Image (cartoon, rainbow, N blue to C red):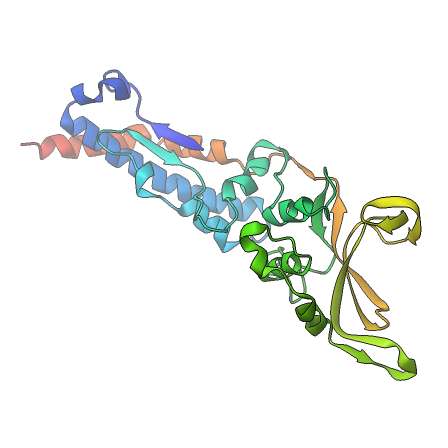
Length: 276
């Protein structure tokens, strides 16, 4: 979160009531204008720093909630990506590693899969190559939220409050569209999903001793076709990526804040000219 303040107005906010009314009014107007311009600058910066940023990200950067406006009693304009609430991802969590560098937080789906023991501790999920370019992609380099919800439901990873959304065995069979092919082999006309724990010996339920040889990399996979022979990765489990700083949020805001003295002077002249 960043903020733009007016300094030097007779001991700032602690003594703001001693500042003439016209000065406070001019300062609040100037801060509001600079804040709106800074938000527009950040949206433009996002379009430069990221490839195809989502409308959700742009809206979060442009949003200006009323409780963060500068007022005559609070000469501070707060600038931060706005969280819309509900089940949406907090854009602050998404953008922080891009601003500060370092590892990102686990996403909601990752926490859900980790909670039920599917995603190992210390690992993250990345979509398999080609997944985001197909019908399961959202057009902005991400996987559609509806598909992620389907996977969470399929593996019954919704918590206690959302357990009714977990997929039943009947629904899984419907999704798979089982049928018989020539030769008596089972045919998966739809799709089945399963988890690979990675290459090695695996017996199930977390045991790796004296078990079946695993040859697929760790992740969530799908199978279809005759005897489930068409196998493709969906998400792979990897070490969490580390980001370098590439979204110049503080720098962009500081650059726009240089306009504050001029805007303040302009509004102060008008305010004093119309003062009663």
